[in-house]
Length: 202
Image (tube, rainbow, N blue to C red; front, side, top):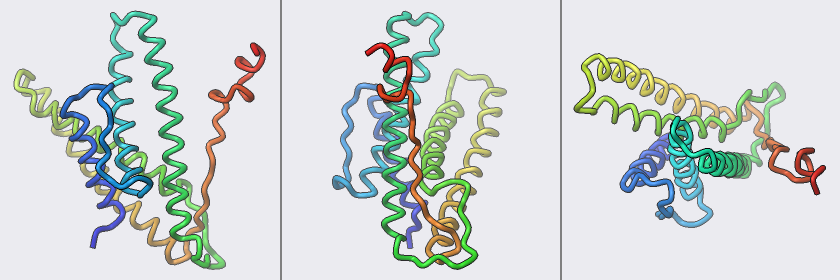
């Protein structure tokens, strides 16, 4: 039986691989999953993460034109908002799935919601992919490859640990041991009514 983390990892690996076919931040997304399903949102989540990963690489070019850098920084800001919105949407999916569960009297609240753990799993998929590419670099030194292989081993261990933790969290929610809540991030800097720099210039 596929656990939820298995589903996440399989979709994240597919999205990461699909993105790197063209490896271009402007490649249109071709999401293979049915609209508004959890699979659809997981694929979209990782694709957005992959694009942002490469935007972060580009903006760190010391020779980048300042105007282009600002445009990319603004694009990263929009991407961060999209990522946050998707995390909240995935948390809403989890909440809806378990909302009829009666919590036990001693139920506790987890420090991290399921979707924010899933967010870290998506980023791990990208870290693993790119570290694997470093290990395969034919022109790299043996020291570089060995160092990257050691890092890759740690990333794979982190993936296994985080996957198990996510499944345990969901299992404990299902058993009523952990309360499930959806917390909104309430980000203020993108809201023209909440960012004083923006609303004082209206």
